Image (cartoon, rainbow, N blue to C red; front, top):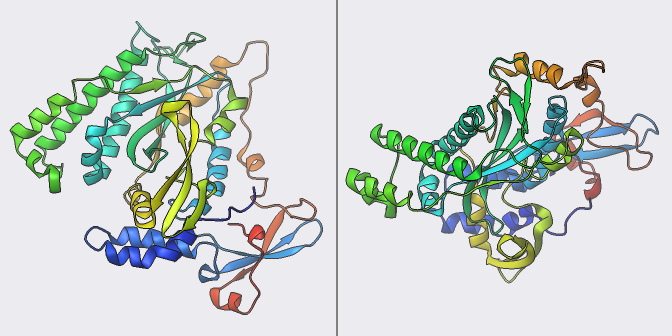
Length: 396
């Protein structure tokens, strides 16, 4: 894919420092650290390396990536490495995509309590799926899945939701057989919605009693118990949005499908159109009108403010595993799932070895397609004496 004409880094270089000065009332050190990392990513400031093709001997100099998870440039390679690691865990069965969304009334509270609310969102959605799937009136099985947190919508507004990718079936209670879901149905969405709402609100009440919820600004009145209880009752007046897509193809389709959801940030560089007259124009998809593509224009300060809304707390895990894929159980239960799903007349299927998955190169020779290998590390000082690499030849 060619390099986009406009990048988030260009916007930060153009308006980042004036924006920081105008936002001193709320901007934090983490915000400034991320903005700095984005501007330095793949520049001489971070040093670089000289790569050589193992086939034709072609050499090229590349600048280092910042490796910040909020940087648009760094997510492609991170996604590739993650998908390679997950490839050996894909079961020979169909998969289901389920989305749990917090109502808009909770978004302001989530912004003031990111670590707590996002953690509750993970746990409430996972416990809901596990509980309903174990119910013999529904699937009656122990399922396995991973969840990915997204906090934005197409217009960069705050919109916390969880994407869950679930194997369309699970282990029977005695772990003696695999229980498959119906071909066009997984779990009842209405039931998922109401159980999810109940679990999340119950967790909110517990957090309030424990004094771990914070209320600032316009939310300060909610610190009073009666006001908080009255506000919680409003959350039960409507069903919460839980969306389940029909089961899609087997493992051969899953990796391509997952690429659209893992390691994404609020906006990619390829959605940016123009920076002019202090405003940013970018593409967005209008899901309320058949996913029609539209163009939005925002002042630079508002664009950067919305972008920074989606920074995650330090060391917060935005991709988590549950059920038989949970870290403590995967080594024991995942091989069992493979055995139960393998037809008896075929030899056991073995997932690809880690060595085979890592054999590919994240950057191939532009001349012959061979593997580029690092032959020399270069400091920022050394790079000042060399000509900059062609933009299309930069690699992480």
